[in-house]
Each structure stands twice: as C-alpha cells, then as structure tokens.
Length: 358
Ligand SMILES: *Cc1c(COP(=O)(O)O)cnc(C)c1O
Image (tube, rainbow, N blue to C red):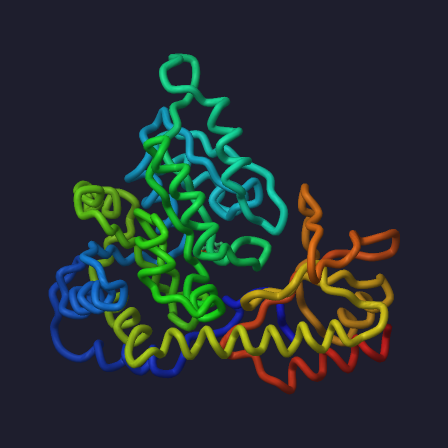
C-alpha cells in the first residue's frame, strides 16, 4: 500500500516496448535522432502551436533550465512559497540561473492570486542597483497541494506578469493530470493561458525518465542547446528520450494514464470521506489527496504496511467548499498520491484498515 508518490510506479508497458523498438539499429546522437524530432513534431501538433522542444531526464533539470532561459543572474523568479522550484530542487534553479533569487509568495490551496503576486511585485521596483530585478513568474499545474488553477486563474496571473514585462513558466510535472481533470486542451492550459515556457512532465505519469522543456516562442530557446549540454542533459543516446515521448503521446496514451491515476485518487478520496473520524484537508482535484488522520489511524495504517508522507502544514490554511478543519491535537496532515499503476484492491485494503482503526 504505497501512496507516497506517483513516481513509485515503474514505466508503462507501451513506453517500455517503445524503448525496446527504438533500440534496434543506429540512430544519430545528441538530440538529432528521428524519435526526438518526431516527439517535437507531435508536441507541436498536440499543442496547436509552433514550439521548440528539449528533452531532459528530470523535472528538476527541466524547471531549472527553463528558468535559466528566462532569468538573468540578478533576476527574481516569483513562485508559490511551497513550489517545487523553491522547496524541493536543492537550489538547482538558483544554480542554473547563475544566482537568481526565488521569491516565494504564500497562498491558500497552494495557489497564487493575482493580488498577492502584484503586491509582492511592488517590493521589487525596476532600477535600484541593490535589488534583484523582476524576471519571471513560475506556476505549478498541478500545484504542490494537489489543486488546480482554472484556465481563468492562469490567464489572470499571466496577464499580471506580462503587464509587468515578465514571461511565465509552468511547472507541469503533472500537466496531464491537470489537463484531463479540467477537460482542457493542451493549448488552452498553456500558450492560450499565457504560458511562455512549459516543463512538460512525463515521468510521473508513466515514462521511465523523460521530461520536455517546451518553448512557444523559438526566440527564447536560442541558447538552450548550450544550457542543456552544460547541465549534462544532452543525452548521447537521445533516441531513448525521444522514443519515450513519442510512445507517451501515441494515441492519447498520456491522457489514458492520467485519467486512470485521477480516477484512483477520487476512489480513494471518496472512501476516506466516508469514514467517520477522517476528513479531507481540501478537495481532491487530480491524483493527490491531503487527509487529516487521527494518530491511532495513522499508526494502524503504517503498521499494516501503508506508505505515505506526513505533510508540512501550509502557511495559509484554506477555507471553502470541501475543506476540513485544521488538524487538532493528536491529528496529522498526510499526502496520498495515486498513479496509473495503482490497483483498486490496494485502495480498498487501505480503506478497510483505516475504517477498522477509526
Ligand atoms: C516531481 C516534481 C518535479 C520534478 O522532480 P524530479 O524528481 O526532478 O523529476 C517538479 N515539479 C513538481 C511539482 C513535482 O512534483
């Protein structure tokens, strides 16, 4: 019963088979292989926009390198205070940008509001030599709280950024999970919503190790080949990345995987909400569930072999439809994540143990 993350799953069968297929015969190295080119062509089709695609092996590299293309060493990147780029990447964005500052802004549900963003921007006037200069806005979709920005919310934030002359980056480590949950098109959730550069994740949703940095304006990607190479993410056998991405996109495989992961999360969330004494911290919107567990249930679940992370309390506790009261004494906040590989029997067993202990 492992709900610690979606990357505890292996790769999907079709993606592994595509790798075996791509293994045959020679292929040009360093990104010039046929699969990587095909991946770029298909992404342009799916996103209904000209784009430049760079494949890398981790989400951290995708984010850090994407931000380095948008932000000078003396720049500021605005993001949510709990964002992966500021909290979970060991300073990679700071390193890749050559020392830019990440400015975290608090907000309920793991989300930024245009008002909070605008207010923080006011603290960073352009000009003063003593201060980093505003350079980019980075948004996570799905957010670190497992929630989603609506298309209108994305648009409102990117409008604010663009008005201030800042490009917008999206950390889409779980882009597919958000997309199928919103029922949006890839174009609507990216460039049409004002996203300039996208970290398009595939690993957490079924690839072996493959993420793409997508530039909707080729001009911004001008020096990116050098950035990727310097970072050690230009694979000599780059076909292995290209083949993963092509298989991921083939016949909507990526969307099927994300629908499965989200459906499993909703099954789990529904089951938890039905158990007396347990409550969701806020609604499940994609494939992550945040739950408030009494200590005795937590202990029983862990003894029964369940794995999940205790989650740090967000700075702003959300209020609204479907939110639960803040954890009280003897209660803790935990995160449960499902993937395309999560089985119903695992969910049902988890729920049975929790119900018996509650
Ligand atoms: C997992 C994750 C990433 C990428 O992490 P890597 O472990 O470097 O692949 C980036 N952003 C978010 C929000 C994530 O959850």
